[in-house]
Image (cartoon, rainbow, N blue to C red; front, side):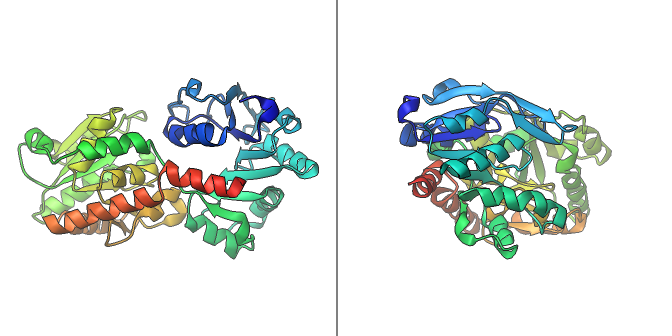
Length: 374
C-alpha cells in the first residue's frame, strides 16, 4: 500500500515474534505501515519475527539509549508525523522520548495517537505522575493489556473513556490447529516410569522466575507423602543450575529438565498432558500459552509484580494464586490442583479454552483496533 493512501502507522519498540499474529492482521485487515525498533536492550534474547511477512513493513529504526540509558530515542521516527498518516499507534512507554515529540506534533496537526502499553501496576508516586499524566494526556486512546491496569488508572483520575482493553495474544491460528490434533499421550509415563501427577514450568529459566521454590515445594510435599513430577521447559541463560538443587533434594528422578523447545506441536503435547502449569515468579504470556492447551495455571498473588496476563486466572475455576515466596502455600496449592478427578480436569480445560477463544486472541484484538481507529 502506497504511503500517499496510507492512514495507519505503527511505531513499535521491536518486532517480537510472539506478536506476529496481530501484526499480520493489522497488515492485511487495516493496511498498517510498520516501523520497528532494531533491538531491545532489556531483553536481547527475544526472538524477532520475519518482518518481510508484512506487506506494510517500512523500516527498522535505531533504538538509542540516552541520558545514562534511562530513556530511548527512536531515530528517524519524528518525520513520519509529516507524512500522510492520520493515525499513529505507538509503543506506550513514556521512557521512549521520541514518542513525546510525536504525541505533541500530532496534537498540533490534528492527527490521532494511540498508546499500546501495560499501563501501570500500582499507585504512582508524584514523581512518576509527572511523567505519566502528560504522556497519556496527549494521546487519544490508551490500549491496555488488561483490566487491572485500567482500574488502577481510573482510580487515579484518568478518564475511563480513554482506556481500552486490547488484552494479548500469541500465535493463535497455528495453536488452534495444534490443539485440535491433541490427545492424551503417555509422554510423561514413559519418561518418568510412573503415573504421578505432572507439574510444568515453561519459559525463561531466570533467578527472577524462582523455579527453585517449586523444587522446595516438591520436597515438602514428598515429606507429607504426596509425590509428583516436574517438567522444566526452557533454556538456563543465567546459570541458575536447578539440576544441582534437584540433586541436593534427591529429586532428580522426578524432574525432567527438558531444555528449550520451539516446536508448537511438542509444546502443545507437553502442556496438554500436564496437570498444572506453575510459575512461582511472575507469570505473563505463559498463562495464555498454557490456557490455549487447557492447562490450569498457578502463580503468586502479588499482582503488582505480575505480568498483565495474570488476570486470565480465575481462582478455583482455571487456576489459583499462592502467597509469594511461601513454600507451604505453594505446596498446598499444588496439592489442590493435582487432586482433580477427570471430570473436574475437563471442566478446567473447557474454562481455559473459552477465555482464550473469547478475548486473548488476535481476532479479538483486531476487532478492538478497528473499533478504536474507525
